[in-house]
Amino acid sequence: MSSNWPVDPDGEEGSEGMRKFDMRIIADKVDEEEDFPMDRDEFVAEYGDYPIRINYETVVPMSDIFEYVEPAEFETLLDMHKAVGAAMRAGDFWTYHPKGSDPEKKHA
Image 1 (spheres, rainbow, N blue to C red):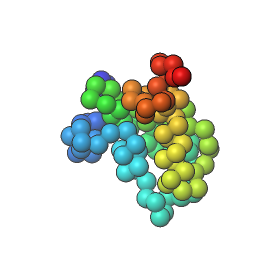
Image 2: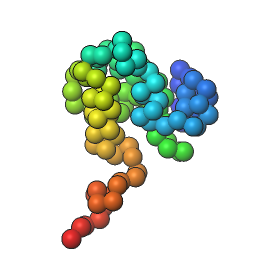
Image 3: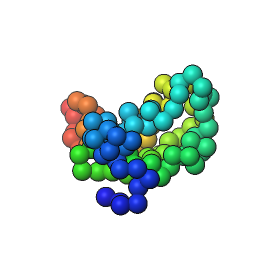
Image 4: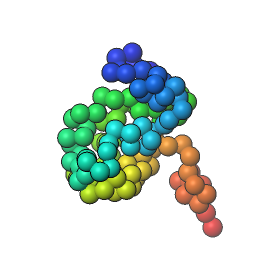
């Protein structure tokens, strides 16, 4: 883990002492009423260095996740959630795969 994070990823500003992870931390950076539509690159320019705790052992800068985010603009918070979720899967940040979606297992 980097000691150069702008905030402690497990402190109250980061993941609230490891109580909040990935998508929740990202969502807390936006205001659903005021920030949309939102430009992806402006958001990353402002928060890209912010630490995002993926799980109990992994912290990455927000910009690492947004390298996989496809749309350049989000109309709504829901659109942003969908894009970030797809990016987390595409970048293989999540180790959990819902039943039937585990890429390591062959399904009949």
